[in-house]
Image 1 (cartoon, helix red, strand yellow):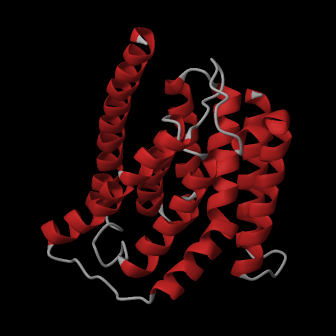
Image 2 (cartoon, rainbow, N blue to C red; image 1 turned 180 degrees about the vertical axis):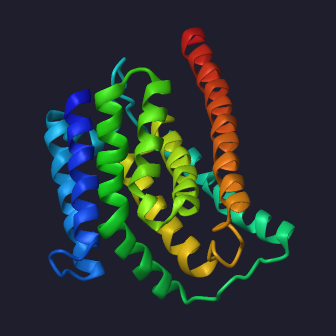
Length: 243
């Protein structure tokens, strides 16, 4: 599985670089669609029989993190803490600029991000990485987040660092037991927010300091979430034993 993931990632990055160099004369939307399709196909080949488990609650074992509606609800309740990071940086740097947008337009943008970016990235850069490098969470974090960073390097190192911060947070949501579909939707909405409503460039996140703040902030927030969920799971297990 690990070799399959490594080969698949090499194929994806090679294809992405080739298409972005304009050798086939494709437009940005066509390139994004083709890359997303290839990533999804590779993820399906790696996951295979695990795919149905992405849609069904439960399924926790030593090699695969299941999910539940309760953990999904708790995780989603805490997502705005991640959205607050660029707002905090914008206030601190005096560069905060919020662009008003109609709810319908925001939802359309989020849906587009889900279909062209979030779904493919989640399946390949998170779910496939979990399957290939689990159960050790340390290895999963290193491989998945590093893959996100390298994949986004075409936009510049600062943008890749900011993307890695998002990769840390979204992976944490998944490992804590949030539904994969919910994580995909959250990522799509986050991309729409950070791209159009709270533009990271206007908030100063596109610079090294801002990108590092977002990445470190996501890591700290993820650690806090891990601690919170560990305490909550311990309390739940104690209640189960007492019952």
